[in-house]
Image (cartoon, rainbow, N blue to C red; front, side, top):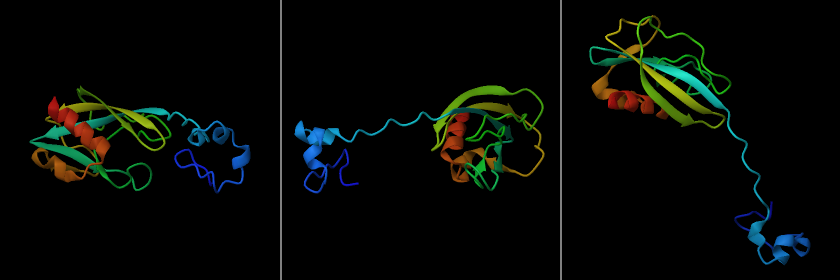
Length: 152
């Protein structure tokens, strides 16, 4: 706790006399930081449902990643596993591309699928005006997805 790679404190260190880095004249060389474990890569899908100048947004569950936040409907991805749920509406979906995002415990590749002129999905949600999408308070992941769709 006395010596760190960024700030060696040789004068306070009880092991200074036996320190190989200090003896070599480079005390900042040790201790060497352990490499980070690679984060697991998760895959999921988000669904952009658009109608009459608005997009369908839902609230995420009250627990887990991005809990309670407004978001696009998705297939149930999480830090623990890939998404498996079916799209919220039947019909033809257009692939808008992939959004990549890194969370604390996992990386995510989120495919964004689009359906325009869609009927009202079942379940709770709200139509949000496209010209005010920036005001929806979407987490960064879903804001990236919105930018991807709007650019296409």
